[in-house]
Image 1 (tube, rainbow, N blue to C red):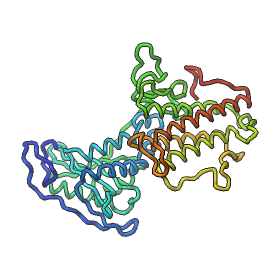
Image 2: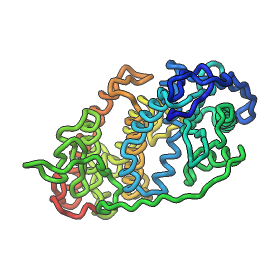
Image 3: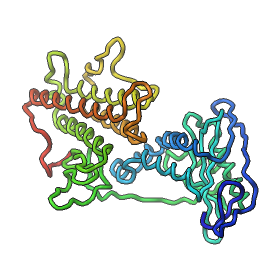
Image 4: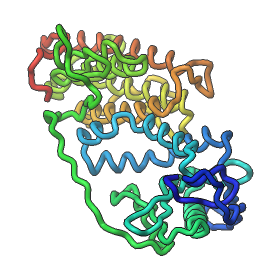
Length: 404
């Protein structure tokens, strides 16, 4: 830790190679009220905790990144955080294992429900201990766990001989609870501002951007997916030609989703409702069906999320196809995009395509391939119904056309 000694048997060694002498950290028991009476024990992290801590941290920060998305706007957000669950999971794992950090977990009934990582450095002449990361399992929110971890970290910093305890957090609505915790602990805020300006062409539909894309090589065309990152051309995703398996699967699924939206975005409600199949399939019903199917496979079957609702019921298993007259295609496509983004977060928060659903013997890889198949199949139905409605045809927008 850059020459700043910290006490005890935490495996930390000063820059000169000597183990510093100080007060050993002890377990701290704190009772806090919120979700009932809770007893939290704070102790040093052990290797068996890391996977649990990574999982709870990604869940805890999901609302924060949604807040970032709202404040920054879709295009800037995707440029800065294209795969936030993956990058955040990696950052937490590195933090948990870093030799330059002192890491502690809060546990309830033997299971970690929060963690804090402390690092030491100097700001000017002042020796500082800084809370580098802190997260609390959403299932234990408002129970005082964050305050307990903060208080423990500050006392640990004090015992190490630092003269300042430092913590940084966001000024966005998603960090409001964190700011309250630190202010309640007696910290003083230094207001700062960080500004972003996107230099990418504007996109009306908030579709994907590709900050990791590399310039095209000889014989490659900008925007056609050449390289290792998914690309966008005329508003339609082009799956990476040399991407990882996850990148390519996401690109192929997003491409089908983009084409569904493109086929339906420029016609009136009267035209879009003018045709159905003998079995009752309609363009509106197809979009609502795809929205429900993604929610079911990824957020329900794979992730096991609770409280999800559907447009079908046990009494009416085809209910999603019966779209009320007041629900417009604009509304349906907006719902479809929102659901797809939520499902993307589920995909990227998984550690492997080999991960298996907790309710069915199916891997994430199988589910994604099935969704590509399902969406492409229904895209064909959209093609035919749109042609019947007004004669409109076409496989994809012409290169260089307006994506809006």
